Length: 548
Image 1: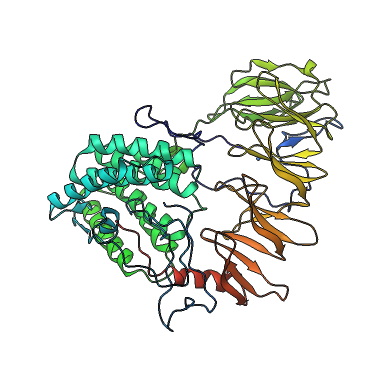
Image 2: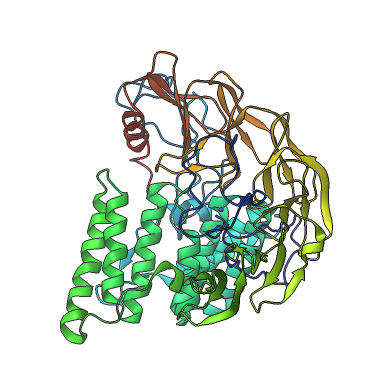
């Protein structure tokens, strides 16, 4: 598994009450196509059985929709009345919905028009046709809103609330041009968001901070944060708005092709009718066309790896004459001498290698220096991830976790294991469960396997970045657990897929419906396909709009 950069946390401000987790990784998590977790991991190397021939092969609180019985109609609503989510999917600049509880069947109370968050949520933003930045008709009104946010912030002591209010205050300060204040608030908001371990909250804080960096001219950091924030596990509407803002950052830099690519991706993600997004994108594309006519197309678009400033480690190379492996840098120059019978790719800045005549593996760093020698006796080794690797003395069981100094961190011998991902690793002992990096059992070892399927077609062997996993209790009975071990959806469904704002489930007859993110009925299972349910969810979200 690759290691991703994480945003640094400021040391000022209120203490963060729980340990911060790594920021959401940009781009797609590793994809596994070999089914549930009953097979060996691609990052786990069994003992060599013969001559080696190759290298070993790893913006709000969770959105909820109002429970519905009949598609398109809220319980207790008159026909034709729109069903709205209680936590509207938001854009990087949007105010986060305050309610944490799902909407009940009763009509929702009217919004407080004096609350600064509600005012920002309904603010009529306009954009300059050339700069593509917000036009503020009444700066004093925004200053009053910022003061009101400060009043709300003072008594807040929990990380979610402080993350939301600080990042909103950063938005207002940015638009007012107070970029130093915006930067301080944005950094502290991200620290509080990371302490919640909630993917959407972290992504929103990252994107809002990215926008501040953009206005300050710190484009490399702005683009990196936009890319980190835009996880495929987020709702399409949120991702579309992030692409829109990333495109504006590229526009500021004269990267016009790259800007157009982002604007096109924003439109592609919003497959439902979205007149406001289309109007904003048309305005942006017109501005890009004028700039291209004046200045040319600008630099060639960058790869995601370039934007994320990812370090490129040495890669395995095979010398046919020596019949041995070594490592080369990105330019093809050999940097770690050829001489190994077998090697693994670098993960977490280290790699396992095996010398000719040896059955056990040793660990080296990117300079080729040995960290763990072959006398440690590890016949089976897994790639390092988050500072830990699973190893075994017989290569087939009794897997334990060690650090890079060969210290045993988790001594429980498991029958099968998977790499750590965001602090959690699937393990099998009788049945499948999960442990944290200290060895504490989070999910009891009672499941037949993991079967975490996503609506974008990815299969994840364990937990998503959001901290959710689909478990199979046997007999095709699937449910959902989170990384804390809580059962969100009891295992009773023949098929289950994680949607960014819901869970898609099938009935025994093959019809599809949906549950909300607390496992309660959302859409009746009377649809012929998953696609039909996803279209219904998009329709339910049509009345929610990210605030720019």
